[in-house]
Length: 364
Image (cartoon, rainbow, N blue to C red; front, side, top):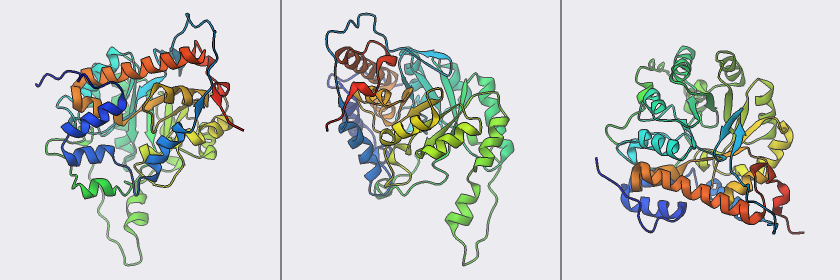
């Protein structure tokens, strides 16, 4: 195994992105980096953070400061978690194992993807920080339950059901780069999945509506799934306040506001833009996480100010993994935590609960 070290010029998340572009094969980098369609949503994710301004308060005593917070009754060292990212052996031979070791070292939680390239059980053994399992709905209900039971047995403490990507978005960047999944990289957790039923289409039928979407989950399916497990269920991929409220009504314990990093439907809102409306709709006692566009500790601060309990970090984990393996991911997470600490200190907010909408500046 090649020993990787942290480059001297890896000083922020953007540096890891720049360095990853040099060390990843072009098609893989374009697949990881790219968004859907014209990438308007992906750009909007970033622009929405940039337009928000932090309003600092001075001379506050923050010597008792901490980034610790509570999510689903568990204490987190910092209000961040690694988002579920598929096929991580594309970036590094150890893949999700290395990411799990890094997350544990920095006491940051990790969501293990259904499409991970290492088994969910083997990843779980390497995580000592909070660990949640992310489920992509499978057309066979029995197989869904089999995955859930595996996650329960492996010690995952929550189930995250992704609902915004029943079909892939149109990813022209990856298509232009000629991306195909590298040989030897596969979704090992799905190797025993029952074969999908074959379908014949009539001329007036659509491969999208009558084909792919016939395998997509509905609210009835998610309600049924919640009833099958004692794990708290988080619904990922919510953008509309009414959908967040419905998720709460059917028994979900939280939502992840997300547009899938701008990788599915283009031309939709950014997560940070809809966060306040969703928080208002579901109330303060409901877990609300968000992802999309986070590159700095200041971004984490802004999300907390607008009502998020914590944020998810997606693409940056693959960039850091490609550049420097486990130590790279750990370093990237440390950078974000220290940036958040500096932001909190200079904004006069000693604790996560001190960060509110009053911490942001809104010009008249």
